[in-house]
Image (cartoon, rainbow, N blue to C red; front, side):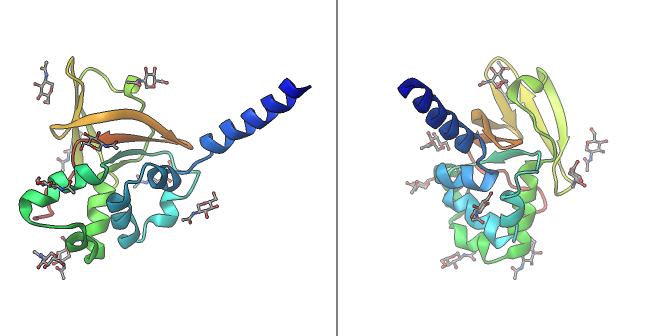
Length: 160
Ligand SMILES: *[C@@H]1O[C@H](CO)[C@@H](O)[C@H](O)[C@H]1NC(C)=O
Ligand SMILES: *[C@@H]1O[C@H](CO)[C@@H](O)[C@H](O)[C@H]1NC(C)=O
Ligand SMILES: *[C@@H]1O[C@H](CO)[C@@H](O)[C@H](O)[C@H]1NC(C)=O
Ligand SMILES: *[C@@H]1O[C@H](CO)[C@@H](O)[C@H](O)[C@H]1NC(C)=O
Ligand SMILES: *[C@@H]1O[C@H](CO)[C@@H](O)[C@H](O)[C@H]1NC(C)=O
Ligand SMILES: *[C@@H]1O[C@H](CO)[C@@H](O)[C@H](O)[C@H]1NC(C)=O
Ligand SMILES: *[C@@H]1O[C@H](CO)[C@@H](O)[C@H](O)[C@H]1NC(C)=O
Ligand SMILES: *[C@@H]1O[C@H](CO)[C@@H](O)[C@H](O)[C@H]1NC(C)=O
Ligand SMILES: *[C@@H]1O[C@H](CO)[C@@H](O)[C@H](O)[C@H]1NC(C)=O
């Protein structure tokens, strides 16, 4: 009986974890600077929609800093511009769920939600998007999957 009750509690915990949206998962991973851009872009409710089926190429705060610091920028330089924030965030989104096993060895072109292409390379070293290495693949969030990138993807039309 005790084991049975424990199993139910455990099952509920697992269900709760699996039910986390992309927004909630990024919050729990503390990707606060990436999320600042999501909010500046007005995309937070979309990110919290459990129905989206995305592949999200995001970066943690260290990864965002790796892109901005060499250009003497901080996140507020981006979030002060909603249009730019939206362009950058939508460049990190692909409209279908791709686990790492779904990515073929070699080069794959994906059209991001902002309409621009991302070049994905999978080889014996790992997975790269526009030459930026994937640190952690397969972080699932509802029907979506998040890839932690070494730094932030910036679309070619954004001049930092
Ligand atoms: C995200 O959606 C959940 C319900 O799925 C809700 O409980 C939560 O408050 C929402 N979070 C934000 C920041 O809107
Ligand atoms: C954050 O991302 C960097 C790569 O940019 C990685 O080296 C580091 O381990 C990550 N930190 C955490 C806490 O996941
Ligand atoms: C941000 O990156 C710069 C160089 O790229 C580094 O010197 C600095 O320590 C980093 N800051 C944080 C908070 O990671
Ligand atoms: C970036 O933000 C800092 C701090 O708010 C500001 O001093 C600086 O002028 C900004 N840089 C650009 C290029 O806007
Ligand atoms: C905001 O970003 C857009 C797109 O990068 C750019 O065209 C525009 O000039 C920027 N606005 C300001 C006030 O810097
Ligand atoms: C990614 O997820 C797929 C499907 O669950 C799994 O087969 C694969 O081993 C995972 N890859 C990594 C690197 O975790
Ligand atoms: C993303 O996919 C959804 C569901 O398949 C579709 O309704 C939507 O139009 C797509 N958006 C883009 C930008 O491709
Ligand atoms: C994006 O990639 C597709 C498929 O490879 C290609 O047909 C299209 O011309 C590319 N678009 C741009 C803007 O490079
Ligand atoms: C894999 O691709 C990356 C990015 O294009 C490249 O830097 C790396 O050298 C490649 N590794 C091998 C073993 O070819």
